[in-house]
Image (cartoon, rainbow, N blue to C red; front, side):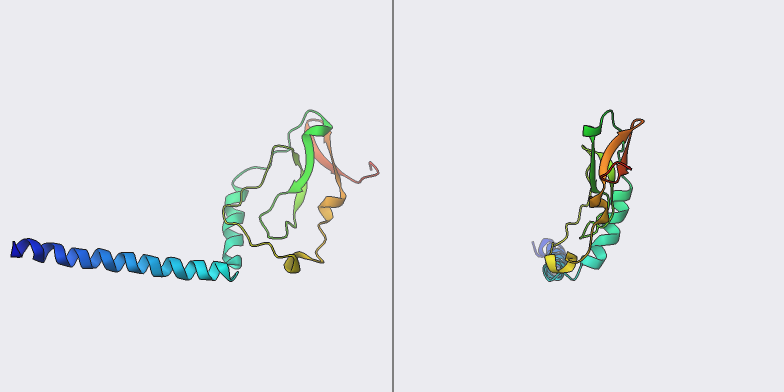
Length: 128
């Protein structure tokens, strides 16, 4: 019985230390995220993941196209004419703060989406 306890006890302490370490690291990451300190890390990860998914611009009629964001930045600075079913894939969500994004114009929103030759294109509202 003594030999069995000697084998289990060191393994139990090691597993306990691993669990505590994971909980501490997880807690630190949660606090950093809570206080918006991971935003600089999230953007490159989101961009790599989102860029792996091609932007769908196929269409048959004008109603298939919309102007939508195509990047994962918190203020959605890049936009394009895309298929109405397309959406960005950003696995790490940002905390949206109006103070961060206010004053930044999203110029892509001033355009309209139209279907031309099977592809969604952005045009000025007056049609030119």
